[in-house]
Image (cartoon, rainbow, N blue to C red; front, side, top):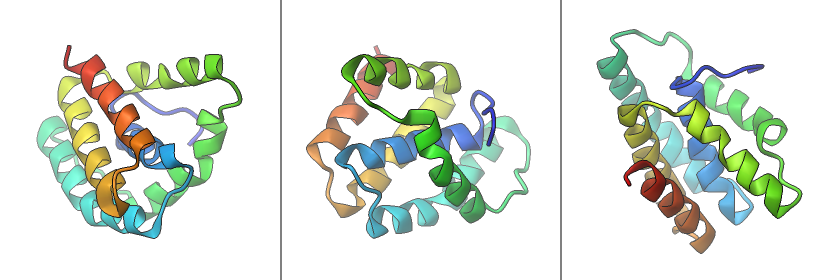
Length: 130
């Protein structure tokens, strides 16, 4: 996962993980929900783009999660804003954004939607639906 392509499955998974980790952890319940949702994400992506993604989504999720910190490590508030803007470049298509938002809310809510997860979800929902 050196460089992600805009509107790719990897970009969607990165967004979902980012929302889930706003409470400082990626819980077992969130992981299970993301894995359960993965075929739906793949199908929606296939329906939209008309291509089959042959990668094993469990492996893809693990790979994105492993590399999450290198893409989104945050040390101060200015960095938070600049790192958040990565999603404006990675998720540019309205349908892909909707898929990412729906899946992120479902996964993050699996262990109870933490106030930080809700806040970040609402930030992106407002930004993309304004």
